[in-house]
Length: 313
Image (cartoon, rainbow, N blue to C red):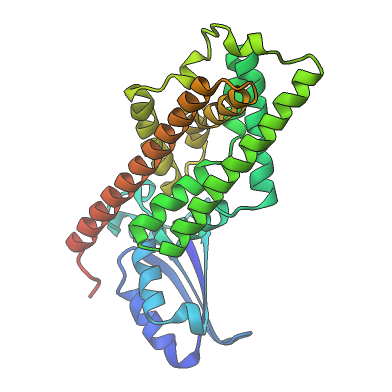
């Protein structure tokens, strides 16, 4: 269940209450006239089944409540109420399958910002991966992939394409490309430093590296794995089951490919540099394609669910 706390101008309260009462899956409606001070208006609270939340929020936005008042949404971890159970039973579909588009857009907007923290995490992850590829250490590679924050901008691009939000597309794309560019440059400098300290050497790049050679040898399986990971990551993001995102992070070789490209470039091994770059692009493209198609499928599915749901009399 979701808990909505609304501040409504007095002249819109009746319309808001009518909308809530006509939305399948709502319960515990409370109206406190004149309780709000900034902005001035009435306080309205209601609980709504997650699967009906997006429809209600969209309706409130059509009443311009996000401009003239306030819409705050919280997850309810525990609700002991027969009315809540009844609301969830009446709402279409299953709550775990529901997509809250405004929440998704807001979350991906935040995660796709080219911030110091984002660049720092991506750079550190790429440096860790550089150590992994030079030492042919799969454990370091997995650790570096778990640290990388690049799924945020990738999800932002997919969300923006489905929601037709060009500003978010460019914002996410800029964060993705600029972030990787900075991370690769810093990792190349990191490689030169460790070479000067005697910790890295050319023979490590030229070695067979059976555990990590796949990073600079892309094939169609690289795209397939990235595509499947993109589907899993999108489903995890839209269902608020963030635990699956760790599995997504360690199943695609975006960060290791960037790291190997940086290290190989620092040793003028352009064959590996290009191979790693293509591996990186294949992974990024696969995740974006999968995320976009998954969101489109979810949007179609919920449109069908809404069409089958009768309105409350």
